[in-house]
Length: 366
Image 1 (cartoon, helix red, strand yellow):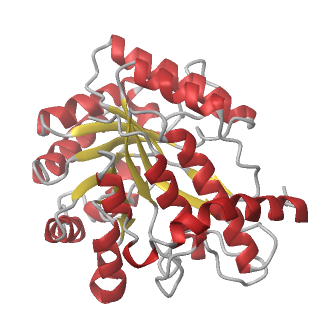
Image 2 (cartoon, rainbow, N blue to C red):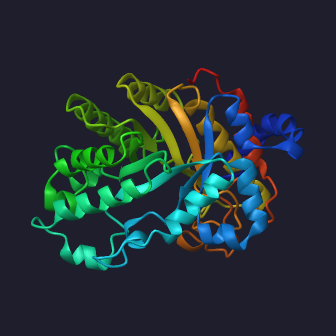
């Protein structure tokens, strides 16, 4: 859905109320420092090789992020080049970078229907799946015990289009092990590191005016309730937070009510992959930046009202290094601008919008 000129101007107008206050703090803007005052963790996803080759970007990450998440370094296809070998080089580098800047690591991710290496897909069946799952989670979580604070244990397990009565995705793991693979994964993870915080992660839970997302919230609540009844060691729901700049920023009482329902079940809430996709948003960069900033602010303004939200991570930090430039390029050839800092590492309107939302968050987290 394309935005018209009135929509673009509305986004710019909303930003105007944000920018004057935030811009005054530009020389010392630090999401990490602002979040600390709210007992909130702020971080971003990184690629370790990018951090090593781009010192200026690494310096920006050090200032802004108290949490580092590996964008790809801890996925199966990176950690498992062959059936008999684990490769921890990239993941260990993420841990080392985090330790160097006194940051936590949020691990991503132990079980997913994607990023499964070819050898594992070929071998994964009902006879082998449990042993494969057990070996992988036990080895990886034990390797990082005490160094990775929290994990996305299972990622993207709800898919209403697969039309199961329970709403679960018909993934390779579900086909091989049945729905119990989810519970198994959490029990394996807590057995490997009893001190780790464990999350179930998914996308498409953000918008109040998208029917399938509202439906998915209901399914996720059923999943979380069932896991609580079965005493599965789940500590948090990780909401990815991939926002779409071509949609109206419909984050309101529906989202707030959903977050409260998750909290009432006894779970923490992490926002783990926050960004705003402007692939199909019309307009020049400045116009798009205003709309993107409005989305960040509108989403965080609602989400951070819920004290159970303990962590906010962006999926990257600067447009200089974003996977959306290859996964979601613009048809007009212009650069995509989904993140709070531009390719020259300067704060964009989105950065000031995020800072404003963090400053306005209640300090009720413990």
